[in-house]
Length: 193
Image 1: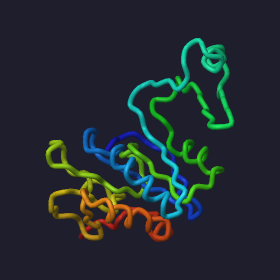
Image 2: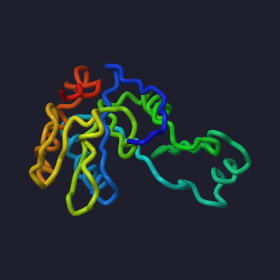
Image 3: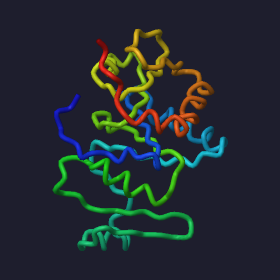
């Protein structure tokens, strides 16, 4: 686990959160691309907060929004009838603040917020594991992992569910049930004795 200190997360009953945690190359984004349409088809409004490990731009140099942001607008919100984008420079932050991002998502009133990345943050997680990635399983060191999805059979700590990584229907069932389970899942697992 990271030694970075994080702000307390708002783990209240009103906004179910589920981290999707895995090492790079495991397929987090690919899985989300498959999960989201299936969850939407079940009537869930699902928001996603995605961590990026590098600087990125959503507007283009020369466009009005980019010019205004470069001139000092913070935040810069650009909107059309089809979409909106909020851009803000955060030069003094060492890392994105997940607590702030969750609060920005709250007014949208999603049924569930999936958090891709942010694996060191204290929030309930579904860990994805592929042995061929060559990285260790995180569940033993992270008491916030509630389930592990893997193609391999694994020995998991007590209270951690094993899910088949390559069975989309099973994963959709588990994630779709998460908002109902959220009130009782907002704390880490008890340490094994």
